[in-house]
Length: 125
Image: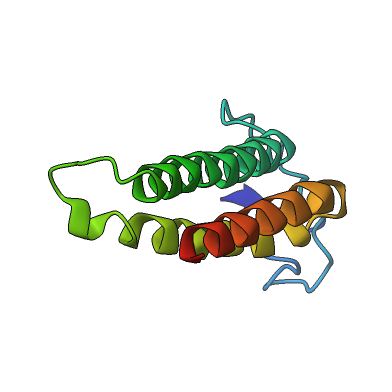
């Protein structure tokens, strides 16, 4: 609560006009609140780096899965060996669509999609 500068009547803090005399009350400018959180720009940059990392990690997993299937390496769950490349293709395309939104990362999106598609075709043949 504060007082009206004209008549001295008590008014609420968020009032713009005095209820007694009707004069305009200057609303004090609130001080900016300082937070210790990461700035939005830094968060977005880290998010982009994470998406790039996820895309190349999916390519690596897809590459290993295709090679093990190609050279008939015996693994415990060999029936799932073709499932991993398919999941990696889906993850690669998802990451690529997210990376296309930012014009600085379009080249990574194209690389991820091209290599992922090549590995899928190589695994099928």
